[in-house]
Length: 234
Image 1 (cartoon, one colour):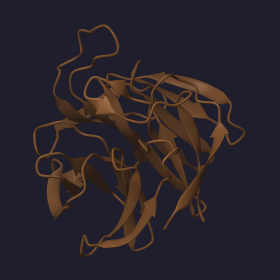
Image 2 (spheres, helix red, strand yellow; image 1 turned 30 degrees about the vertical axis):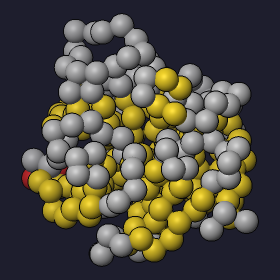
Image 3 (spheres, rainbow, N blue to C red; image 1 turned 45 degrees about the horizontal axis):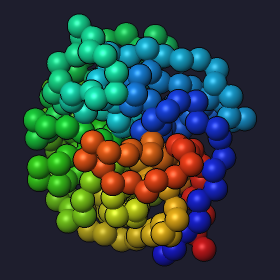
Image 4 (tube, rainbow, N blue to C red; image 1 turned 90 degrees about the horizontal axis):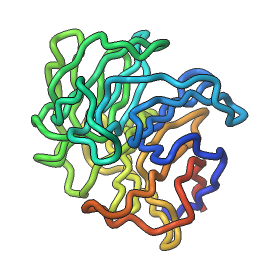
């Protein structure tokens, strides 16, 4: 299905690479600074959370914690003593961003997407291209793996009997069945549309963020700047 995108909030940062609606707040991961910006429903920043994340990408909230996708070596800020230059799943204090725990990614590489789902975490992987569901209460044990053919898995959003996954380079968002892993729906962005990085859902409506990644191996569309907005099926 074709979609239109509606920029809704002014991005609070240069690289809004991950999104998560939680209650009435939108959590935005900035890949440049690795800070999390918390916005209210009117689009205003209410607080900024410092995190130990490096090259931040996906973000989710659940179980009373903030979870971030630490995607390996940063190229956008100076190194910090806490940087390890490898992929991690971070569990952080929801208010302060302080370290609670961390786990290596399922494939040992980078990571783009995270989604909390009733005590479990959906996690994207590069090698092979897959979505895993993991159990953080059991040392992030992999419970199920769905390999997918489409490149560059990014933001995730759980919806009914499926989970939406943004595939940034192809500018599509695909819904996979949570029982089978098979594609059940596909949203196609137009030629002059943003490249979906972050993804979240609120009241049945999908939201996207475009971090506008240019260079360093990325070929996203050159646009006026980063975006945060809503997706409408046409």
